[in-house]
Image (cartoon, rainbow, N blue to C red):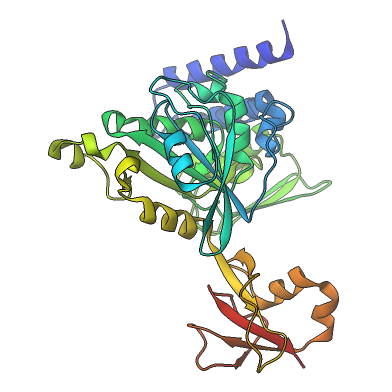
Length: 364
């Protein structure tokens, strides 16, 4: 029996024990320990895939542009059609399942930003267990910046199926990581700091030990609502990603079908250009990118041909370091122009956070 087969057997046993153990207040602690054991075993099984680079089992993809977006969904929901519509790609289009057997990249330009769109093979139930190219597809997803979840009007409920498959593969969509700090130490056993009284400290300790932590300081920086979030905070292989959910083929929708679609889900019909511009804007918002224009001096026009594309969480200090570490040492003042400036040429601190289409001059 191979190592992989042994781990799969252990996973199956733990999953059965979780199913067979009634969940109530008295078994809550035991359930948490079992879930921790399951998370550790799944990490061992997936190995390099869960570390973001694919580990040799993914498709060979050359990432380009300012960000990368993956189209993830069921077979034959129109991913290839959408890709061809918004990019320069030529993805084969057919009306049968598994038309796309590889990964087809295309480049979408929006607001002057180049966004790589990747059309993946259709993901199906069981993908997290490597069914239907599952692990290869998931390795590409983990290495990207945003996920587009797609289904069509005839299979609305499958959005939940796809989301669950990604969850099972350790990918968390549209949620932020739990505020849990883990500082490993050489000795001293486990120290639990939980000012919010989220769990019994013995439960946290047992879960941490099950996950291989024996000497560490574990500090909870917020109220953790459930054991799954606690485990997520202790497992370093979780991937947190923004996602956009869309339903295609809305030209086939009946009024009763439309009522079943959650408000957060974008309704589209690629052939009729329904929802196309909103789709691009949602990707832009989800990626959290901004364009920063640099000025050579305070009186000249900013260079708008080649904006600096960065995350909207950056400060001006981080912008400077992105440009040049040496430049950070050479300047001590920053002046900004744009919608969030109180007046043109406002002098601001280097802790000031960037905004879209900010113009900035660094000087003395």
